[in-house]
Image 1 (cartoon, one colour):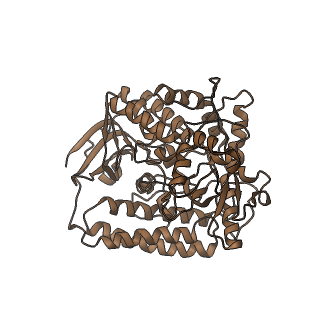
Image 2: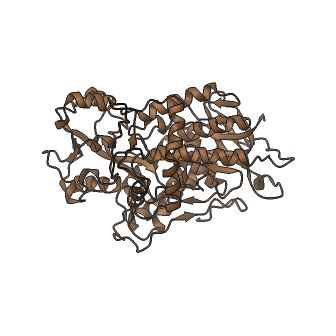
Image 3: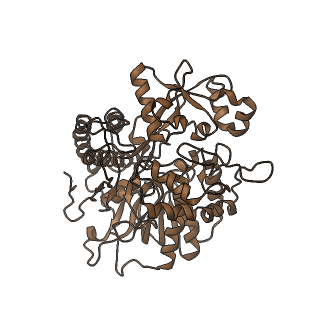
Length: 537
């Protein structure tokens, strides 16, 4: 087996991964892998923008307060304050990389506003902010010295010293990687491994996430023994376009920030019945309200009404969204836009410090893969790209200031296939994939109950055993690896939800509709690498 040596090994090519790689490359050999193209990531689909206090009537304290309120008092205030105050410097990195954020005619920033925000503080590049940021970072990464980029490379599992019988402190020393084009399996050996693989939206039947969002980093870290936190808090974006041909197309929260109202089929607004902030309430409240209205009336969707803004404004402010809706026969200037909630963002993840440190030495997690305490029980709009930027900078700063090496004599054993044979029934993978996503949508989505969660847990736990058998019987493929990760993350979400005996933020259960007096995080132990057993089994 071939082994690739480097100082810094980064998994994932979104804003968190590319930013960390660009900061680390000057300090040592850096290898970044991504399972498809560099651009195939959640960052590329982000529409709204990035939070940063810049308006004269705005303050850091106001941004902190909005974040804490949206997070249902489960955010770590120190983390929130640090990230909010680091925002201007982090944003400057993107400007230096060539991202052109929108400006007004007088040259000042054209700041947007979204749900849960008390002021305009969203830096945006029209309605394709993520695409513009990703393109700039990819250009910089391809030109960077000391940075090796490997596309179509999927991590199978992390390399953990205790599993190899290496004495001393247990730590991560790299990973096994599958070249998804050639089929070669090789090792990457590194003192520092950074997971920046994004979220897990594909664990649900309906999501606005790309197909790559299968929770790989969370599953990898958990199997390596790392703790995971707050996995019950899955954010459902309230306004995904409802159309049979519109696959995962999101209507940005910025549309509501410009005055759009959520209405029923007759055009009647209903959000004020659920929250005094109306259509600009935080996402958890809006998603539950839409879900409740759909269940109450039997309607298949709700609608957005921004017709009063006129065509000229809509084409200028939301050119991509306007064009996409038009392609489906919906003119935002004349028609109501049909919407439904869809799985959007994982507020939990690998338990990590603000600089990426996890409970496993040598292993770091940043971006949506990590749970730093910023989001609490519900993420404030446009805080996600901000967290990715800031935590990538802080992680790189820590690693560059604390040079480390793989313990002497550490050899990653060759990958063993045993008696595995090429897979001959791909239908089994496809069937299990569909079953997991459907049962998660039916039993573990916007409104939950003990009965639904227990039913989901029993079935997912059984599916994980079946998938484990399949994994060892057949040679690994990208589909098998994604299914394995998806099933693990599904079970982590369910187990976390079962542990929370209250309703808070994104977790609403019929059995415990009230919030506890004091909110506490939900922490699950990692896979037991000593016994090879799942501690919850």
